Amino acid sequence: MSCLSIVIGGLIAKYKTNIFDLADASGLDDRKIHAWRSSRDSIITPKELVRLARAFCPKGQGFIEAHAALLHGYLSERCTGPGAKLICLETVPYPDWIITTSFGRVHITPRTRRDLQFIHNLIWRNQKVCSMVRALVKTCEKQGIKQ
Amino acid sequence: MSHISNTINELLTSGKITATELARDSGLPTSLISRIRSGVQIWVSPTNLNALAEAFAKHILGEQFQDIHARLLCARLRDESVGPGAKIILIEIRSDTAKTKACDVNLRHTPVLPPRMQQNLDMIADHGAQNRHVRDFVEITANLCRTAIASQAPA
Image (tube, rainbow over all chains, first blue to last red; front, side, top):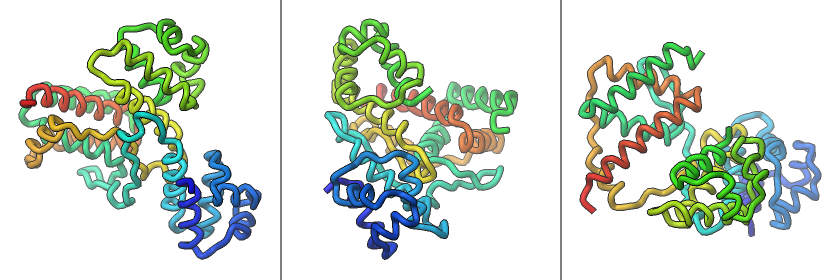
């Protein structure tokens, strides 16, 4: 069984649906969905992934999680070769992506958060890190990057 | 620019080789490497990824074929990770080495920073949430610090 087929099977069970309903809701060919489900095919375009995820969650609730699960399955399939065992591929729960700063709540990737935490721990004892941070802040202010 | 093009450019710099030499050693057409480097082509087949990793491994001292392959694969997966769910998927290279662990353990306690410094970091987080270049800068800075600490830590 391919990773993608396992994920599709899991989502079908979770949302109590079937391949024909999914085909109706997504506008995708039921034979195509069946091929993904039965591991006969693992080629799926980004647009098809989105349509499939939306078909699982027509009301929108849980759509991002469903898409992430499908994408995770697809990427796991592609993660092959000698370096694959060094790759860490995980889906992080949505609340873990929100941090509160003095500017409000910010959605940031766990990787960037971990890097910022690392810099936070170093900044007070390393003048060079402090200067780099100040230079970046100045650039952001000057360029108005966020805006 | 794509993640794979950035990674190939970084590897070319660290291996001190040109794109032509890379094409010769990997057996891939120069035009293909040029398209990948310029971000025109994002998809790299597993066979081509292997060939690139092997070619780089000949030139980069201290990095094994597997590590280089992992870097290229990680970049390719990040390029393929698109759409609404992509923002909650984390793709990275495991850093399980003893030295990296040592520097993470040493920095476990979070110090309280002076207000101005804290505000600077908050501003970077705020900008980083919306701008990939800011996030890349943060990652590079953190990686530079990690490398510097790891090189000082006892083996």
